[in-house]
Length: 485
Ligand SMILES: Cc1ncc(COP(=O)(O)O)c(C=O)c1O
Image (tube, rainbow, N blue to C red; front, top):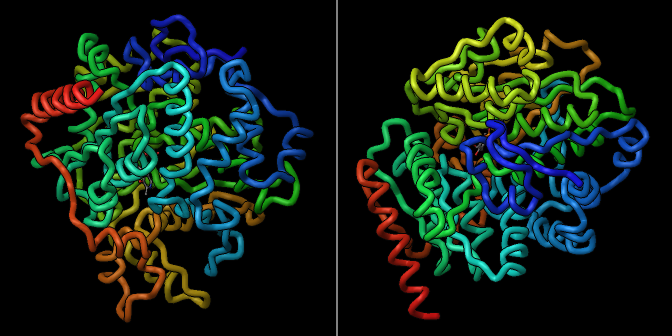
């Protein structure tokens, strides 16, 4: 039976359902499986013939005991979670016209048009399934840089077991992203626009972490989180590496590289997981924008907090990529003592220097680059003015720019899949600014047009008072719900 432990080593092993419902491990660490399941070449061959949802069923079954979720229920949860995706392939992989070995994997055909929908629908549907069995209700609090919030709000809308509180740095996400959270009209979704956040989403993460560290509040409100610290998100995101590989490689063993626009490192850690499970990935490109904590860590062995820079690829404007702790845990020998030492030092000084062995270990198969806004814009322009015009969103553009910068590091037969993590319609101002012509139809999406026509419902507060204001509001909502039975 697969069990989950904490990267800080301070809890007894728990089952998948507990890891999913708790979100953060109680000792302040991140949940990880006790062992990572390894697939044989024959299993990979069998999996390569499956459609996305069947593949998802097989991969998830490796991490979820059937005693916790029976296979038939798991299949139902997966099918329900991907039913709202617009594309028949769910996550289509398309060639980029500029280079025959370059592909884009469109991860944005879910209901809120970003890759966050991939894991969020399954996570929240599964949460609801487990809570119904336990006759319990949860309060979800999550910080968003623009895409996690809409995905969670949409997946949670109307669920009787969940209250969902997405917090976002007001003015630092697009109007389209804001409206996706504030126009749902669901009584159990409570978006909070937070003003004056110098460190953007990271400021909100700190408040969320403080709420979780308060055991009395935890219990009173039954708090949980669906940020990418939640193991279930990472597990589901690992599937698209398998799927992408099988789409473009004819034979198991063919060389492949994934270029991933990275913020909190959840998507890239999922890639690490897929490779650790036996998927023969040649390498990963960690594509940062000007917020380059990850690039600095990979290239110098120093993991440090720098001031937030606002960029065009705003969803990856992240100062502390918290999934990096998971990655460090596995790449440096699964030693909780090391992680505790590093996490505590990082909290005190905002910086850690990896020893030479650990610095070399994280570089194994990982390259990185920091992409400027001007390179992002040029990449969008070039992709759209090619023979077959392709409209990239700024995050997909960061991945493509990074892939082009590092192309020469890989053999000519290596295919590179760039992760298209958001639909360009979420960033219309950037499209308009970049393309010197009539805005193409791909720059719009009917769901966003509809959301622009209805009233918004949100709470607004200042970052300085967020903790107090949030607790006050959450307690108020809880009281009202209790009064209504
Ligand atoms: C559009 C988009 N691309 C990339 C990312 C980065 O993903 P991760 O935080 O898992 O590194 C995010 C989220 O943060 C996103 O919303």
